[in-house]
Amino acid sequence: MNMNTPETVLASACDKGYGPARRWEANIELGFSARPDKTVMSSMRFKGPMRVQRPFYPEGGPCHVYLLHPPGGMVSGDKLSIDVKVEKGAHALLTTPSAGKVYRADSSQVSQSQSVVIDVAEGATCEWLPQENILFDGANARLNTTISLTADSSFVGWDMVSFGRQAGNLPFKQGALSQRFSVVVDGRPCLVENFKLDPELALLSSPVGLSGYTNVGNLYFVGAGLEKKLDTLRDLIPEVSDSLFIAATHKPNVLVVRAFSHSAELLRNTFYHIWGAMREPVLSLSPSFPRIWST
Image 1 (cartoon, helix red, strand yellow):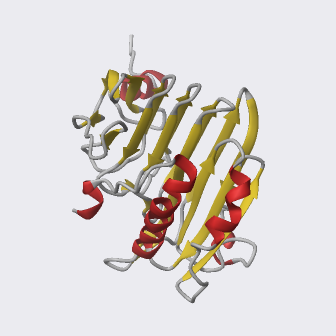
Image 2 (tube, one colour):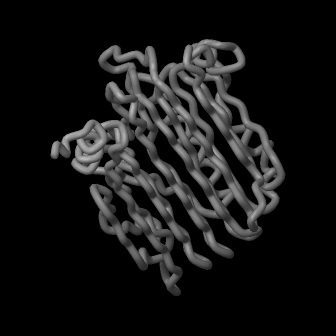
Image 3 (cartoon, rainbow, N blue to C red):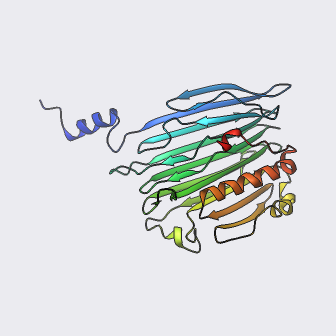
């Protein structure tokens, strides 16, 4: 009896990591707890190629962590999951040592996905400051970030996406992106951002889309009464130029900076500057730039 039917061959291939249903998962779960003198990384569980270096304490109490994905990028079938819990009164700052990369999808168009879930407990603070995700030509990316807060916890974070890579003249000519960034306070959504590329990529050039800019980012400050600091934020916004289109707006308890740029470095450095300058009015802390940003 011949057991090599098309169905059994496909099932065997998927089990081995091949074919349209394949998936390679990597996940990491991090927990942060408050001690009398500082925040500690109290738990870490991981599966697959995701790690963190040891915690750093360049400013005393807040715990700085560098999140590592040693492969350096996602290929078809990759599914990354990041789960962070910041317990009552703790303060965690998380960043990445380099840009994330989403490479061309394979002939089956199997997607590459990343899920980030951050839970910030009562009186806690989380700063989520990853470097940009670069979408290479032909990528099929699914990016989802969910932030859960209480009424008296705080969050500062951003997401940045580069369509293609300017260095090396590697434009983004085809591909897909579905992106969602949501903030929930005490179980109620207070901010939900969705972005989905159309198949023709008209949004990249449309005046109601990216208007021809190849780098886009949003910077968020979330906390009780922060909308009252909108003028302080707007005083930090650089003038609009041919290379950078940027503005700030607000919702109840939320400040948002939106920016388009022709340069990933310019967008990144602009967000670095605004984050550093707003840290005192938002978190009552002086700026403390992770050393990894300078390497």
